[in-house]
Image (cartoon, rainbow, N blue to C red; front, side, top):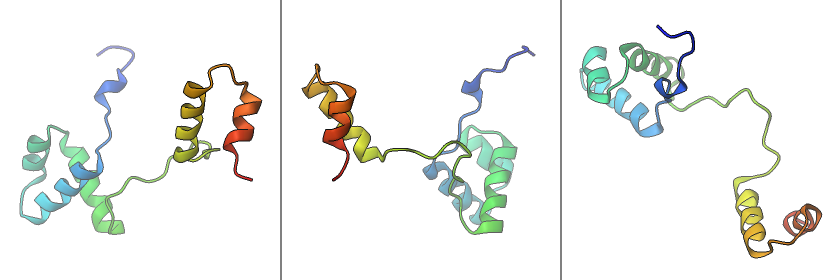
Length: 100
């Protein structure tokens, strides 16, 4: 096994796949069958089911990183401003984007 693992092997389940795990498990499928259908590891399907049975939700938990400084809508507005006004400085864009 290589010393460094590639991150491409560690993809998160999206919301649809999490819902499929729960639905298939409630439909009577084994974890092995579910993992084979989704193309994932058996332990991934089992962990998702465990979270569902413990918490009643299959959604991802929020990350432990730094909280966002801007919303997605503000980010989109900044990108639009940069494209429209290529010569604008960062200070000018900040004034235009921040709500008064």
